[in-house]
Image: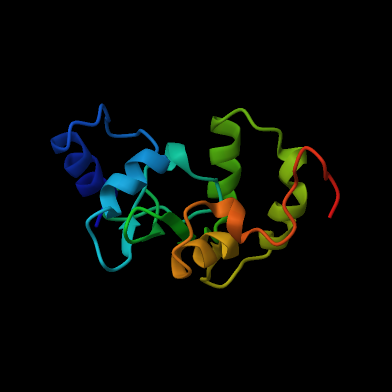
Length: 153
């Protein structure tokens, strides 16, 4: 479902949510609580995501990205996007947000002479394990959790 549809669905369910608000654990749970299969939420607003995502040509307010939400209320397990390949667009976005280009020099340098169209994603292994194993809390899926008694694994 598109981000727009997710916001509309959540509003109908009584959530105080407006377009441009991020989906937190409560909203993700609501979107998937009654589902038996994972759902992709696509095309989030630019304000919610990092500069290196590709703009959605069908709606310039959004990026070409997605979050995969596990069913039964488990929440996000994978996030991904098509990556921006135009260095000038990334520089313009960073300047618009008041970011120092020095902090991103290493990344911008990678794209300085061009880049091939590409995508990337990040998977929360503990989140996937929590869902697949039907665990009640993610802390039960973390192999070496930090606790009051143990800061280092």
